[in-house]
Length: 338
Ligand code: P6P
Image (cartoon, rainbow, N blue to C red):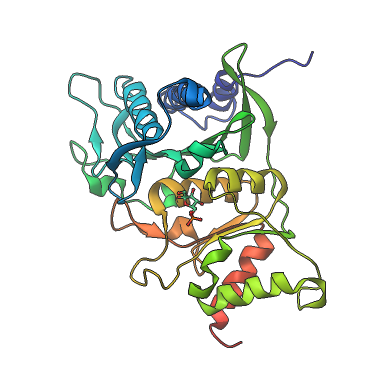
């Protein structure tokens, strides 16, 4: 029986050996992991619990909220607000930031999350997940404002997701590579199942919602057309396609076996740069992908260099196997010369 390393032990070792994560950040990650465990328990109830279907309300994005969206959001707020490690939180499900109530100790970290990404898949029993990102509150002024959250993704101090699928798996980086922890339901703890995750630089698998093809910009059309042309085309190899419509599940596949994921700008909403959210989807996923040796851009520039201007800012996303992401960037630089 191999010696199992729990998430807590892994984090203590990261704190002690690498000095990478102060105790307060370790505590924060452990609290988020416990919240994900509770969310996983609710998700797994399905029809047996009163958790399925719509909540009859809309979020700030104008999306219909599922009951589990609200449950997951409340679990993350309640788990994190009293621990003393946070100054404030921001969520896809809440219009504005959530300040830690004065009755609780104030911390130095800012936590952002998409509490349940891919919730359109809840009612059809397809993998969904929680995405989270941690920043340090900027020094120099008391209190917290929305402006404090508007830091580029390169400033993150921790990022991760928890995918609720056949296994419940927490995937985490604190800046020293990527580790994966699988939930041992009998013990009730996350156990280290992979570390130093590496994404292959090349791939034969792309993930994009093909139904939007007629709306894409030319460089994206060029890239996908070449993939579809297969070995008879300019790429000289056949490609496979996957689209789960749950970013956590699509990214987890790429973390596991490589691939490229794209949610590009399209002309349906020309004034919006993309569908996915920068602060609590693209930035945490982008950092994880980079920490595993992949690349993450908005088609032209590194996601983690984008300077946010608003809390729920959207962005185009191209991430995964480095050589494929770089090819898409090259096609954007060449513009419409095809
Ligand atoms: P579409 C889920 O709603 C989400 O935000 C991501 O998880 C997913 O990648 C994308 O939207 C799916 O979008 O337009 O294919 O339904």
